[in-house]
Image (tube, rainbow, N blue to C red; front, top):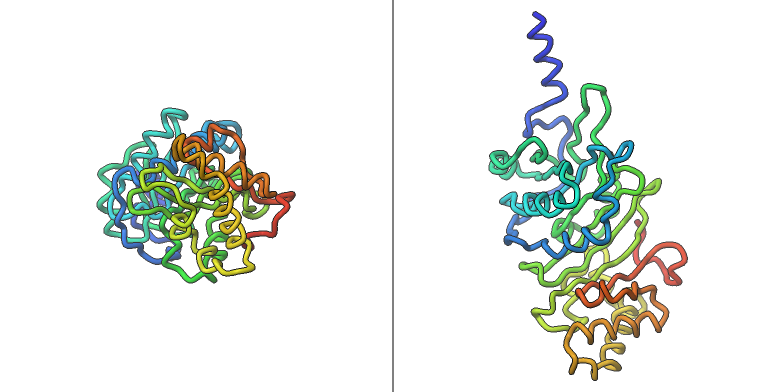
Length: 299
């Protein structure tokens, strides 16, 4: 009897990865993710969220990095685990998929710090033997929301708040099939998600033209590329900045990209001017209070 009671208690806090205590919220993605597609996203996070990834104080001790919607194969989750653990060796990593077959296929890759579970935007967080819910420091949701209606985006964001620690981050965006170019929202949890930045990333292998970023805008922006909308105003200003700095192309695409970004800053946009970001192909448009611009979207 004592053994039976132990097993019942253990299983109540360690359910099978395919168990569904709550119905996963969301829709299956196509699941086609190339190896290293999200490498530049991870490189961005290693610089932008370095302190967050390293934190182990108080509730951040054991807090998860969540890869939401890793696709048909678990390689984006495993690649991120390898990169982030160079910075924080004890980082627990959770890959979440809404397709049971994808979770089953990923389970052989799980270990004591890497987990794969069935779930959706309502993250499949477990309770420990002390009754406390697992905590989350960072969520990456890439190439997930583009298949949804725009009206569903805000509700999906709200569902992802559960379990995230104050100061935690959500990076949500879209990339091209090989991760060469992407655009993403960065949101930070206060009482609710607050937009912190819109990030444009390129490795310059497809050249440099602001128009290219329009094809990978997040779902809640892509349909607002019409005159009078803030995101359209931004792109029109960026295109003019590119034309004015065209002479910099002689020195290379990275220099041209950086020069156009500095022109955007001169035009009044809160652009991170650090050359370490710009020369690496990251344009960070800072959002939030004091941005001097209208909100791009309602979080």
